[in-house]
Length: 146
Image (cartoon, rainbow, N blue to C red; front, side):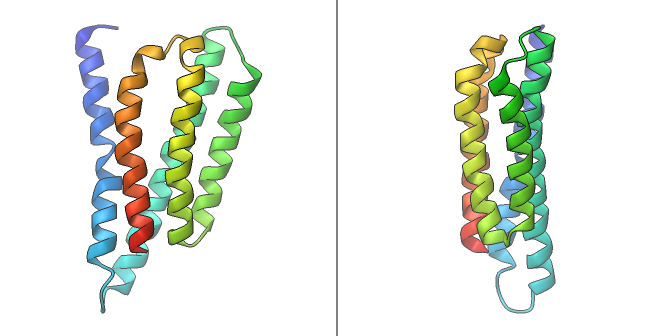
């Protein structure tokens, strides 16, 4: 991958954290009196976005497995499980669902740390760690504010 594309990927990945970080802050801001509609909307929005991120992380395993011609059973099962658990988190009340999402983001990283090297994506683990740290923390803070 060229340096320009790698730099673009990093920038887009960090920009993708904005809805989670902003959402966590807004949940705390809107938690007061008279802001119930905004509070509910932001909680749902953050939860939905986190579930999309989790589904994407699970889907990466499918794509990498098939692109490498190594459809690992664990990658395929994990991809489907991550997507399903992300969806379950959206169905839960925000305080519980966002905590589940934070835990799932950490679990996704731990699985990626084990499987990415086998799938030829080990070079992305440093970025994944940083993204996971901020994303999971945002989910946990949003859950605490819910």
